[in-house]
Image 1 (tube, one colour):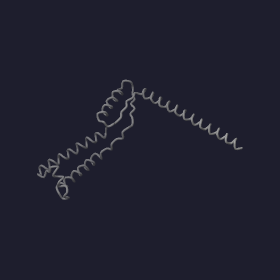
Image 2 (cartoon, rainbow, N blue to C red; image 1 turned 30 degrees about the vertical axis):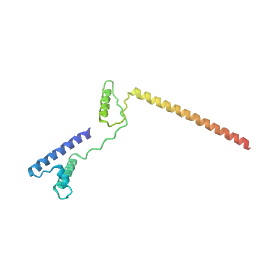
Image 3 (cartoon, rainbow, N blue to C red; image 1 turned 90 degrees about the horizontal axis):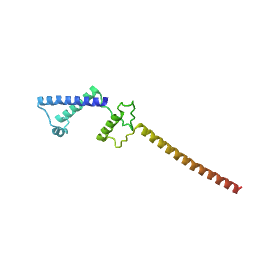
Image 4 (cartoon, one colour; image 1 turned 120 degrees about the vertical axis):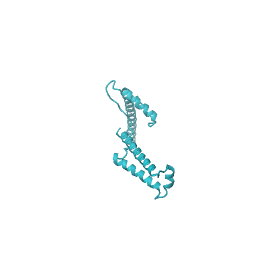
Length: 158
């Protein structure tokens, strides 16, 4: 929330400073269109270079007033909402997911209630345990075959 407020404040300050510059340029009679600014920017001493330098200075002034712009937040892999019955968790999540869907910022979204998530977690854990037991049985069988073959070879050689 703080980042959003800083961005709004930054854009308002930047716009205010730009408006002041427009008023000053119209009073001085030295106003320039954007196209002419970029055409004249090749010349280091041109008015366009001066205007671009002022724009950079304005940005630095805004940074000095409110600090640099905030970094983009890290996108979490998941969200866990908790609260008492009737506190609005489902409604909040529905609104959140619809906002994400409209913005298109997250390619894959999956919504689960706690019981459903725990059921899935337990199913996956059980499946992994069965797979581990199956692999252990195969390894034990291979080990016993190896031991039997070794013992057979040892008896034949002596």
